[in-house]
Amino acid sequence: MIWVMLAVVVLLFLFVIGIYNRLVTSRNGYKNAFAQIDVQLTRRHDLIPNLVETVKGYMAHERNTLEAVISARNVAVTGLKAAAANPGDPAAVQGLATAENQLNGALGRLFALAEAYPDLKANQNMMQLSEELTTTENKVAFARQAFNDAVLGYNNTREVFPNSIIAGSFGFMPAQMLEIESPQKREVPKVSFP
Image (cartoon, rainbow, N blue to C red):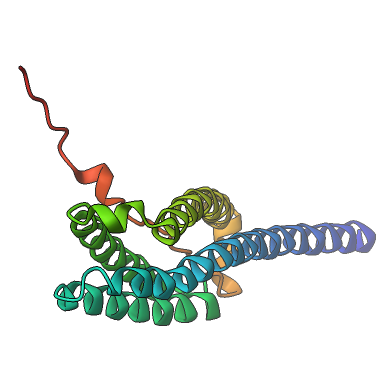
């Protein structure tokens, strides 16, 4: 009888260890996925000062727009550092999303103004930086999707029964998905008939 009870306790202990290890593995998965976002957003943030320098000579009287882009970039860099320090912190991830949305808006205004300057649009540096930013934006989108998938997997693992009991006992908190809005996604398509 004692052997049966001991076997049940050992099996229960192994069961708890298995759940705990799955939770740790899932949490490490979303942290790794966030590291990929960190790489791409850092690259994006590093490109922005070069873009502003290229535009500066052409758009000297658009100083407010240039300052808004640099300010939004600095806020986004700070948000990224906070989120990278703890990608499981919902407030930090939400702060990053808000900062990136503001940066997207500022860049959108900058590119809209750049359309009014044909020499700037034809500038080789401007074309190259625009292409690099577009490529980086695509990489950010893929990295964000991988992160959100990892967060979903972690949250699902954390919330199903009996994992939820173990997760609560060991302090596994829910993770926040990263949702960065694209200004193009919100634009209403323009339709005109001749």
